[in-house]
Image (cartoon, rainbow, N blue to C red; front, side, top):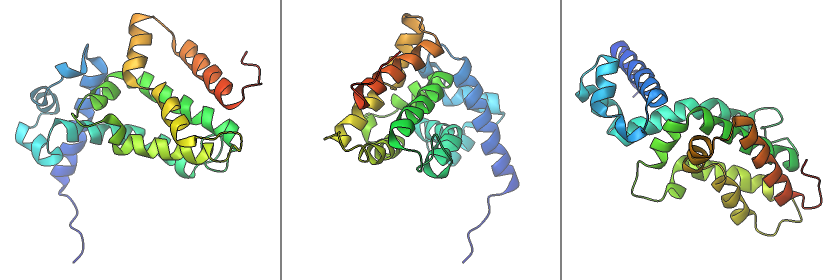
Length: 197
């Protein structure tokens, strides 16, 4: 039996909900302040539409996060250098981390909302496991490294949304400062003898 296509109004509602949620998370002071009622009102739909379409607030945040992240994930999985899989690891790993960092700077409140949605470990989330596997695969290609699994975790820890929020909001670091610090940290870890300028 062929898969049924979603009705046009359901598709429209989903797009309106995601757009409304995106705007609300971008403008909020705190991700916890954005409620399902706020999103429904901004999208012009009933709360029931949100729950039918996304299950709950966590499902909605996951859908929005995945939609925003999709171009970067696609570039990492099958794109050209510097993110794509044919890039040598010493160039690819810093590029992947820079892409994740920039994404989380640009979508800080959404990333914070996602990292704070579950009582489960954030390290068991699908998006985290995908990034960890991608980095671990690239790290496996560096013969000098003995523990690519732990190294991938350590590198991803430097891009956690709560750390980025602290550095941007409390320590007033700029985007370029954060990128430079992460690049220097990554270089020092992967190429201990290389200058870190």
